[in-house]
Length: 128
Image (cartoon, rainbow, N blue to C red; front, side, top):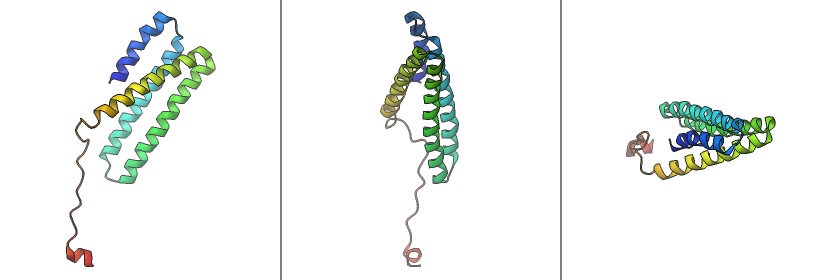
């Protein structure tokens, strides 16, 4: 959530400093879209019981969201060089804050789902 606060705080900074608003808009659109994709695919992964589906959803989400952000910055840069630079700096700040807060909060928060303990095998099952 702090990343979204930083994104909102960046707009007045962009306005006051005279940075290209296209850079802020590209970073904001890409960031909000990738956060939405993350929420949807993480929910689907949490609901799945198949480990391969979970791994595929989470890995695909990370790769796709990275490409989405890169294309947002690249697109802004194609239109206006300074906008691409401004978008890149904002995206790096957003990612750094998001990643850092998630790493700090993860051990403190509750587990998203309880692990399913596999009952130990009995001697009869182990034998055959």
